[in-house]
Length: 459
Image (cartoon, rainbow, N blue to C red; front, side, top):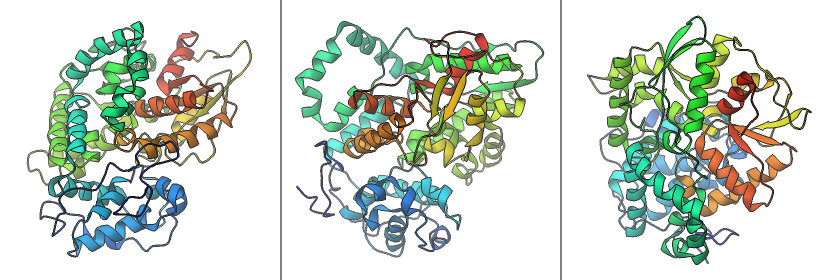
């Protein structure tokens, strides 16, 4: 079956829809006057093709319009008066926003800013099919709201423990309701007791820094043990760790999905929160969150009240691995072994850490510093696993295909443990490894470091 607007298949070999469907209303003209894509940024692209080998969708389909330079051509045409057609929106929606093209571009094209500006226009200007609107509304009614996720957490954990969730999956009800809902259900991690980080975790030994810590949304409610490990590791390196109770979402999912004003409002609130905390730096353990927070200066550049404050805030944001390398290995490391021999560990680069933030060496340096660990590299490390924020919910077929490819390369390393720095990657790759029938334990970087510092076995 073919997509009648693009000519590409609507389904992947897994039989899952690749693109939800064409928008009902096409915008003509394409863009309004509210922060449209910068023509100067569009003109920076010289169509050299260096981006092609690192683009996940181009690697899958070999379609020029599903490459970064092809999408830039579509956006340039729209900026010159062409309408946002169903085909154009389909090609833009198919982009993961992984930013591999940014780190591979010799001309320094800011595809990240081009894409975010364009997606904000699409969000305002194009009416999507009713089912897709409902799915997006559900996602953004839940994911950026930690308190709502907390309310969901209890029933979800009960359904997992009693087998009810497994029974519901077997009925196929979620599949019939829509592939996005099925993806949400299948991606949910197995939940244990809720773990909450204290508002203050004091430094162990002499205090070297006072840092704030983003607790996040999905990270806070579904991966609380990662936050707890992060706070302990920072404290072990001489940091007083402040995790303000009143902090909310950083706005990353909203910004990356074109919900620009929502993202800006969340960014302002987070700036207020950490300014009031009086911290020297703000530490982030989720790649997608960190990449957006480091771009607050751009996001709020035209806000007369927040522009300078956002610039100062963004300059204080550090990924966990960055600040730990800056502080140096103060806390002693104990061996983390497998059956009294070395533990073979593969590290997966989260795209918004490797490509958007350019943080590649620090996590590897930290992992190599753990006694008993042998770090191995994953082939095609620059290619996205298919998580990409909410992409694996909106485009589950494509995401599953990329996840399966990543699972194959992970298994090819012979690793006994997979480490990464993003909750979405943990869920996405874990599911793909289960589909492959060869599950490999996955942990966040902070969890492995914490186990080494405390001299404990991994749970």
